[in-house]
Amino acid sequence: MHCTQIISPKTIDISIEVGYHFQKALPSKMWQGDHTIMKKVVKFGGSSLASAKQFKKVGEIIRADKSRRFVVPSAPGKRNDRDEKVTDMLYACYDAASEGRSYKKILEKIRGRYDEIIEGLGLNLNLDHEFAGMEENFLAKAGKDYAASRGEYLNGIVMAHYLGYEFIDAAEVIFFDEQGNFEAELTNRELSERLSHVERAVIPGFYGSRPDGSVKTFSRGGSDVTGSIVARAVHADLYENWTDVSGFLVADPRIVDNPEVIETITYRELRELSYMGASVLHEDAIFPVRKEGIPINIRNTNRPEDRGTLIVETTCRRPLHTITGVAGKKGFCAINIEKAMMNTEVGFGRKVLSVFEQSGISFEHMPSGIDTMTIFVHQSEFEDHEQSVIAGIHRAVSPDVVELESDLALVAVVGRGMRANQGTAGRVFSALAHARVNVKMIDQGSSEWNIIIGVKNDDFEKAIRAIYDIFVLADL
Ligand code: ASP
Image (cartoon, rainbow, N blue to C red; front, top):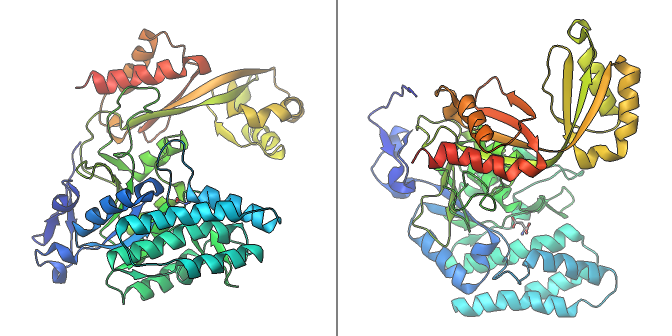
């Protein structure tokens, strides 16, 4: 891949900071060779803050780099496989309290989680007042969102105390409208203004407030979104998202043994792989930082020496392999429609799709031939509407044949490097043939950085392994 980049003398190599070699231009007044002037937003997930031991690791990470100025914590997560997340306990506690069932035990358990952290860190902090207010609000039915948000709120207080950073309640700076839609621009303005006067702060993740002051949360895992919003508001140089894995993996570790970590991935590639089930980051966390061109670095709190995955808008960095990642999902159904001279019939596709629309079914892929058209849908969504959709298609376009094929899986081979390499599709299909996987459908995006392949559910794992082997193992 060839890439021309004009690098002015006033550039720094932020690889020193993030372990990556890419250049980022800085305004001249910032060029003093002093890295403390950089701004990083660091978000820590629940498993990174599940105990005092984990908090200490987080403290070390933050103190190791002065530019880690804005911290977004999640609620304490699981300490082991049998443990419960504080957020889940809060939902359960609220349900019990608001329905008049006994809730004291679970509330005590929640309190115990925080006290254990506070004691383990040796902090002089008492949450009596916070818990009393919380209990009162639970009984007054302050709402599920309020209840769930307390996990982050309390962890934010503990974290701010531990670090000596200012605590900023997210309800004061993150806004939703009456309907509960996130108010991106209003939030950005207010948060920017508030944080411009603050050197270092902790802003709890996951929630904000409606115009009437009531608390509203993002969907589960939403602290990732808060981190991204804060990064945008402070024009951060980097958004570090600390979790319990060392980044995005090239393939699902439940299918491939010890898959490689992806070093650098673009937002588009990430979107494609996340859609196909590879999940490390909340989907909505991409938009705020993408607007500002701020990279996200996924890091592992338990292995801070690992460089993790860098997510960028675009990059000159040559990918390690031709593909960036391979992911997929099972449980699709294909509806094949055949009609002679279909290609000459204006409006054919629209009429077919409107049948699906009327049944409230969204389609996933739509490969077509000269006289054939295939619609891929989620089998679970489609099953209940199957016969009415088939009847609708008959009425709408009088096809010669309509056939269903169920129990299919889609596999996405994704990579910006595919465009520059010849024979990628050939390698994919010879690997699949070699593994005796029957390919049911091929759909290559015109941008040439993804190929979607339909296979039988039973062949799914075999297909993923074959593709990983040919592009990653054979490449090493
Ligand atoms: N604590 C919330 C959850 O469990 C939000 C988050 O962790 O990001 O979903």
